Length: 170
Image 1 (spheres, rainbow, N blue to C red):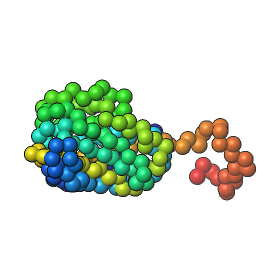
Image 2: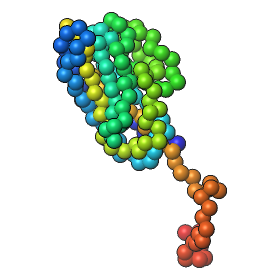
Image 3: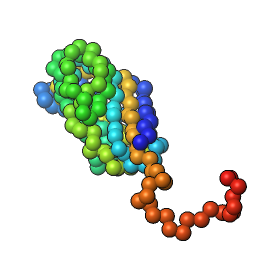
Image 4: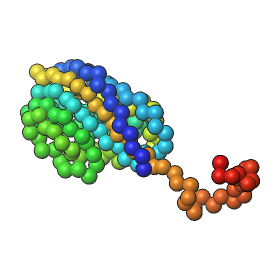
């Protein structure tokens, strides 16, 4: 497995919700992942300044535009601001003001496993209550892909030839 991390540090203002439990305008931020191969693991980092983060839904959309995960789904009450890494198998949010650390996402990131890694990944953010606004300060995605090992017997290389023969080690 090989892993690479990609980040977007351009701040994005998150507009206010339209009322009680009424979604405001959704905003988005994109990261292009050039890595090829099929995904074996995905982790997401989020740096968000927002009063009452329980108003927020943050959704990560795969480049195929049909696979998505709500990585933050109205969590943590009035504990303002968070700078966290989301990774499957990690503990649940501790929900304190200015929360940091590694936690499980609201929905499993394993939904992306075995999909192609490359392309434009989009993070959407929406506020679901009025009187609170905030900013997606930055976010990142770590994408791990499986590396093919040619020394695996399951490849059954019949008729494999090295040219020129002898090749003198070159």
